[in-house]
Length: 487
Image (cartoon, rainbow, N blue to C red):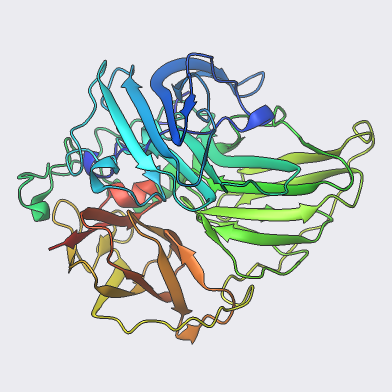
C-alpha cells in the first residue's frame, strides 16, 4: 500500500542524495554500494530502485529505495572531504537528489528544471560536494516528493569531525509515516500549470504538473488522517529495533523528521543535552530533563546523554496533530534485555530553543535587505500562499552577493509551516517580538506555528537560485514556495 497522497510539482520535487542505513535500526543495504576513500576524496554509488520492504510482519510493500533499503544507506563522511555520488535512476519515473542542509554549488541542489534536468529512468548523474561542518544532514528525492519520499527515497548524511568525537553510541533515527489503507493517488483532483521559460526564473519550469488539495478542506484533513502507521528507521511497530547501550556510555541520537507531521520526542529517565539543530552546534548546552522536543518536517535535532540509569526504557515519538501516529523505540541496557519495561507518564513541558544554551554575544549585523514573508491561504486551506502568491507564479526575493538579508515570517493559517531555505543557514533572532536569549539558533528549516512571527537573518554568500518553501510537502505542492534569486 504505497503512500500516494498528492503528486508534487516537479519544481519542488526531488530532494535526494545518499545516506541513511541507521545501523541495526533499518533494512540492510546491499553490497552494490561500493564506497572508496582516496586521500581526502570519497566516492560512492547510489541507486534509486524499487524493492519489497518488510516494515513489520504484516506490512510488506514494494517501496522506492536507495541501494535497496528504507531509509537509504547511512553515509558518513569527514569534514572537508570531497564527495562524489554516482547516482543512477533505476525507477520507472524521473527523479533527482537533494542534499538537505548542504550549502554547496547551486547546480548540485537537485531541483528539477531549476538547477538540473530531471534524471530519466536509466540515466545517471554525479553529485559532488565538499563535506561541511560536522552535523546531521539528510538526502531525499526532490521530484514528486510526497510520493517518492513517502515511498522510501530518503536517508541520513552525517558529517563527522576530522578528528572524531568521544561518543560510544551514535544512532540516527528517521521518522516517517505510511497509510494502512492503500494507495491514495490524487492525480485527478486538480492541476497546476507548468512553469515555462527557464531563462526567466520568475516562470520556472516545474518539469511536470502539480496537484493541489481538493476543493473541500475537510477532505484534505481526511487525507492527512489516512496516515496511521509510524515508520521509525524503516520499521513499523512491533519491529522497531532497540537502541542498545551499556552503563557509562555516552549516547548521541540524531533525530531526522523525513515525514509530513510535527512530531514530539520524549527521552525517558535521563538528563540530556540538545547539542545541535540542522547541522549547527548549540553553544554551551545544559542538561535538561522531562521536556518534549518538537521536530517538524525537514528538521534535525541532535541529543546526547549519559547512560546512567540501567533498565529497559522507551523513547516515545508521536505526531502533534494525528493521534494514530505513535511509536516507541526501546532503549535497552545490556544485561537488562529480559526485564520489564519501565514506563514514564506524559510530559507536557516543551523544550524551547529561544532560551536554551548560552549566547556567544556576537553582534548581529545590520540588514541591507529586509523582506516580509506572510504565510497564508486564500481558500480556507486548500492552497497555501506566500505574500498572496503561489506556484506557478511564486514570490521572488532578489538579493545580491554580500547582502545581509532579514526576513519577518508570519503564519496567518491554522497549521504549522516548516519553512526550509535551500543553500543557506539562517540565524533566528526573535519570536513574536521577543529576542532570543540563549545560544544563537542557526537552522535551515524553521517551524512557524499558527499566529507566530519569527525574524530570521542570513548572509547572501552562496550565489544561485534557491527555493524557500514549506517542507510539509502538501503545502508546498499546493503553492507555498518562493525563490531567493541572486542578481
